[in-house]
Image (cartoon, rainbow, N blue to C red; front, side):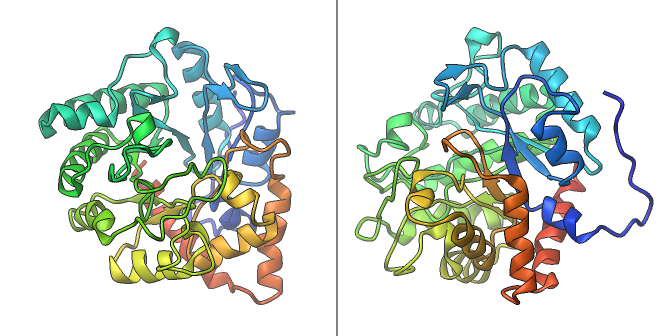
Length: 354
């Protein structure tokens, strides 16, 4: 496509452009045209980030955005071309079970976090992560929602241990392997994103399906990887989780909690990078909070990028509706423009590395 828009030097961004950078959306299709929703979202709503999936949950069919390396590279080239600002094109490519780029579609094989942890060599983890990062670089994908730094506290956890997503039950080992994984991505120009803050490894339930309460199982040891990575200056983006921990916040899940995100992550741990939410259409949020409440609470809690994968919900959130909710927050005095500027500046600072 040749519709790329050039921004003028020293061009002052509009409010709409700033809000657009606070949204990450998914879409259906292995290609798009000027009539596609994703084209409209990027060109007219200035959406700053998109996410790619290999499987369409609602239709129950593969091939949502990804069918082959050649197809995927054409799709990402076209997405980058229509964006006025650098576009985050993201994916969940942890390796092993959580793998959007599958070998049967001619993508390179990869190992799970559990397999890397069991191997026990940080240099080996760096090598395997560098293969993932190089694949993403060649495909035009610049943001990987990995590594997963959840501690393998509960071996019966269906979504962490059950998917081989934890490096270890030892938080120090998780920190060491996560550092190697992130360095490999950073060295190849790919943004890595540790998740799921402040820890999903001790839960009994899957937040994709509903609320997961870790009040009686979570410990501060689950913060050790985050402290390590922040101290090493390797955390550029962190993803929240929707777990409930009533000892940390009696009323709200982590993604919507000012106490957990601003209080713990920003103030206690000293993190000043981008905070991105896990998918706000997951059951832990959508079954307990309306869209308006979720958007408002997430922004008040300190989330910089709101994620709407548009792959789980039968009626995905409309982008223009989300934008109107944020504008209403400004009009009603719930936030001021400074709050929007804070997130915009964090996002654009990180995009400067692209």
